[in-house]
Amino acid sequence: MAVVNKPILFQIVGYQNSGKTTVIKKIIENLSVKKFKVATIKHHGHGGKPDLVEQKDSSQHLSAGAFVSLVEGEGRILLQAEKDSWSLEEQMKVLKTLEPDYILIEGHKRAVYPKVVIVRNGEDLALLSNLNNIQAVLYWEEDVGVVKSSSYSFPFFKIGSDSSYEWICNYLINQLN
Image (cartoon, rainbow, N blue to C red; front, side, top):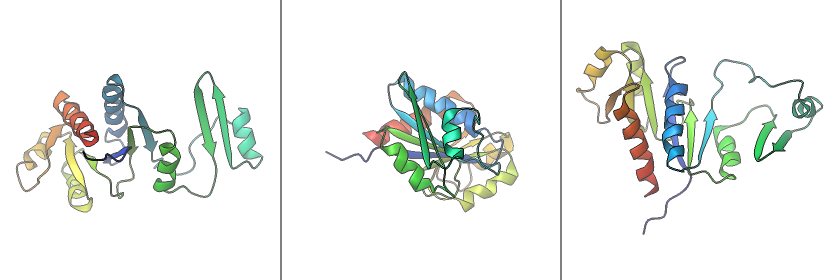
């Protein structure tokens, strides 16, 4: 019997405004309905630090110099931690303590984990030769979909199609088996 290393790591990558958040939300919905525990990491690629609710006590703790602040209420935990930078591996280490079945990573294009690449147009096709471990491509424009029949070994799907989400979820579920 094969030993599965949980959690399964999987990326959704593409340029800004390509639809990564919409795709990842749909994957989360599909896996959650099947009772899988899904954790996510979002790369804040817009520059600067992600927004905090500054008036809340936990943010004030960070402002006062705390390294990490955790708030719990009715089963919900909010965790905020502050240091110069967090590597993707450090972020995953934090999430792994919660024992998810999957960690879905939005962004971090250059990371080595299995990934779906979203391409908006022909210009984005350069991603396919610059990234590794591509499992599938989601495309917006039909001319990009025509390219699929050329020299790529991974499947292409029209973004938002039921078949794209079905393929991704089946791929992920099969990684646990």
